[in-house]
Image (cartoon, rainbow, N blue to C red; front, side, top):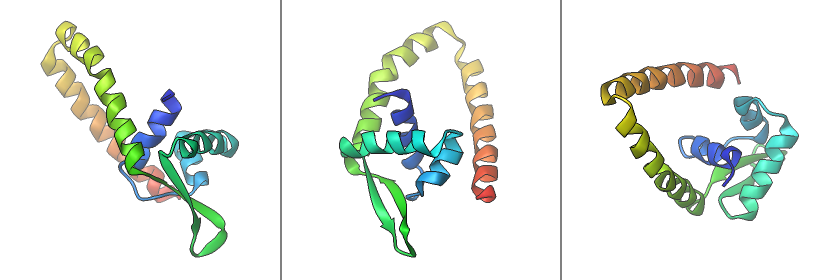
Length: 116
């Protein structure tokens, strides 16, 4: 997985299926860039693209079970890097920073979700 592909799988793992345009806005990339990333993930069977039942022209992108597995595999593969890092950085400092970043992410996600 590329960073962009992992990021999209990670994003979709926490949300209901979303339109490609909303995903592009969330990642601050062009619709074409997002369409390319979605297409690559769809070819791997990691996401599904389904028609919008209210508007036949629109689509929704959702994560598949295979996509959830790929996301978890990527996190597992990254674990040794995080373990190395934790041996070199104070655990309390990392925990404090993680809590602050999680709070920031919640605020930013809520703002982004309310803007669309």
